[in-house]
Length: 355
Ligand SMILES: [Zn+2]
Image (tube, rainbow, N blue to C red; front, side, top):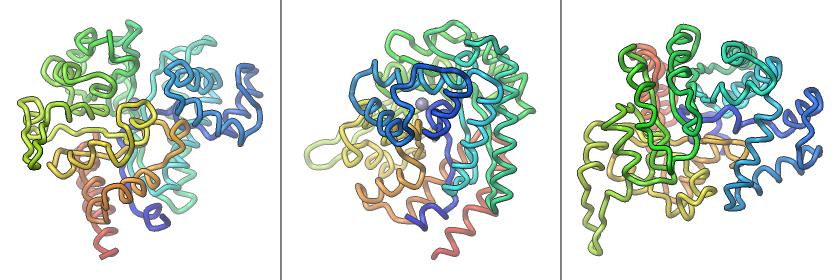
């Protein structure tokens, strides 16, 4: 575990409002006068978040985000959460992270979308500075999400492009998949494409292949947020013969990155257990698989703990950890030369030294 924490890791799918420290939730609730928390005891609250997310009830799962978003409605709170996010990731050995959030969830107390974005960017910069002072190097890129059930996707896409030189590297849509297919937001994806800007789409998490197909073929998603249901297009016969359907073949042939989040999938019921998670087969078939945390607070996980759990379930060793890490770095939304720099000068040398 100590080696895993030291190993350079790359994270592409992490939600800002899903990664707060329990202590910060309690302190921000007090500072901002948020009164909805189930308890003000830090340890108890940490346990409550995991249990509520674990309960299998969508209502209690969503309640966890009502609390984190509830305490993130001021510029100071947003900046603090963003800075601590980067500190925590750097502390866990993450060298490059794309952290996402939906600006429209933080305007309850009158902040403008621009003010939200500026506060978060300020926090990320501060987090990078603190990490460096602590002897760690981390680079952060921001993904702005639009919520599928709201109708502001184009507006958020425009912000993602407007802030592209200020640390925003891409766009995403999040929220309920069923009933809100990605094609509802075609105008936003079209806007991103004509501006040569990057986006991923949450698709194929709880919902099936249709959502993945729309995200890729109609919307032009470069990556799939989760995408784990691609497994439904892969048949394994009783003698172990594996057959890929047309969509699964396309995803693999085009090297479309899958932002897999094993612990989160187990919590929301998208996979029965880590050992039964499709990541084992998808990695064996050499899809462009990446390992991610999704919501570190709700799942009580980190990049290191995800890798430790996968190593135990599938017997993955350092070779696989390096492979997942390079897959993720190749799939990042920053410029090619910067990705190459991190691969050749940070990631590969560390794993080579280990051998
Ligand atoms: Zn997610």
